Amino acid sequence: MIVKVHNKHGEVICQVSIDREIGNSEDIEKWLWDTAEHIAHEIKERSEVIGEHFAEHVERKIKNPSLLEKLKRRVAGPPRYFDIPITMFEDYQCPTCGRDTIQPMSRVGPVWAVGYSPEYELGGYSCQNPDCPIHDLVVLKILVDRIDEKPER
Image 1 (cartoon, rainbow, N blue to C red):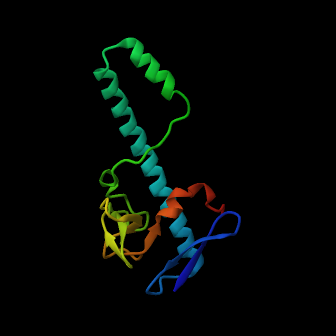
Image 2 (image 1 turned 90 degrees about the horizontal axis):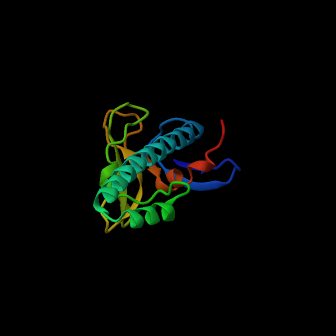
């Protein structure tokens, strides 16, 4: 079964291949977007917390007050999010089963592998709870990256 995932403009932005029948494609598409939104929210929150800890650490290390003020002016403005090692983002809560079993998935050649390694491309996220009805359904990273295109339903 192939599920086409549409953005709010009705354009197909990706396709997800499912090896078994789970339900109708609209329900799966909605679940994919909802889970991507959940993961994007978690990444943003965790990035902000890590950024605050980093800023506090830098502030303690810099002894020159004028240099510290110069750095603060330079980074002033809207917050910027940067890539944090993906291992800090393991164990997201699955919105379907409620357990902390969503893990990053990497593309290793033509197959998916659970976990993240810098050698391989981060392709998405998947619930690893074998009792979850959507076990091993991969939420592609493109959905998390483009969450602002989620359709209104």
